[in-house]
Image (cartoon, rainbow, N blue to C red):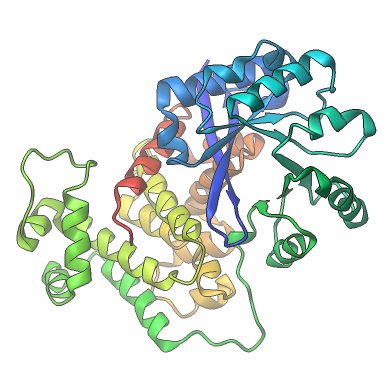
Length: 403
């Protein structure tokens, strides 16, 4: 059974990455609810920690993984590094003696314990006393109950994690209530303020990206752009000499780097540099996610049999978060940018075949396996290639310099 592993970011109050919850799907037809939790978690762990390499997935951050009662009693978490693994105790696990004993042992060994989808009951207090993190669902629990739980449990010295935080308003409310960690897609939503204008300097930068990715944009122009900007030159040399390229001899000149990357590679590199400049006042995960999407869309095109232009798919993924980066409505932004009509339709309303590719990437990120199955069929992508493309995109993003 093939295992599909995705991740959902967990942020701290500064909107910096604290860790990722690992999301799982097994095989071509099985979604997590359709197979038992023990099999699901075992496959997830073996693939993430042993086969794939957990650093490739979480990049040195914490990995939150769900554990069933049986896996806890068998002390399976202890097989994996305490520096990375956060042991999530599922909401249906009772605080019975065996479970509490294992959690106590794990805690003493240095593992972090998180209680998932928590709803307070007095009989859970033995687990609460051992927990480092308590997760509460902002969609499934009323604000009154959440506030009551936070007040009641604060004496235990735990960190509170708000799950399914989907808006900036919810993020702020959770922070005001005492939550320190936040999980959800609020970071990828624009903070639209009535009457706010996009600065001309930013519009110019966006237009530069769009122009750089046009087929008729001249290679000589890219050379001039790099040559007159020291920071781009420095980042280019760092990138070309990164582990991603596995070069025996170091590239030491700008000209060599440009030749090695080629016109397409240079266009994309400059696009990433400029996009990062646009997002410099946003959570780093936002630009990182845009970069991962760009590479994943490009790679998926190779496995679809559609003959689509890979550069067009790369641009699609790169611009897929531009509304959140610019804090503007996507439709209004598209009216001002020199992008192809097919890309614009895909970004605004997920129309056309490009829209299906974006839907495929988004559903994989969320672990929405029903929508994922539909999008795979619509795009013609070989399903088994999707997790490979995702992991390659993660690895590629890790090789980029701090842009």
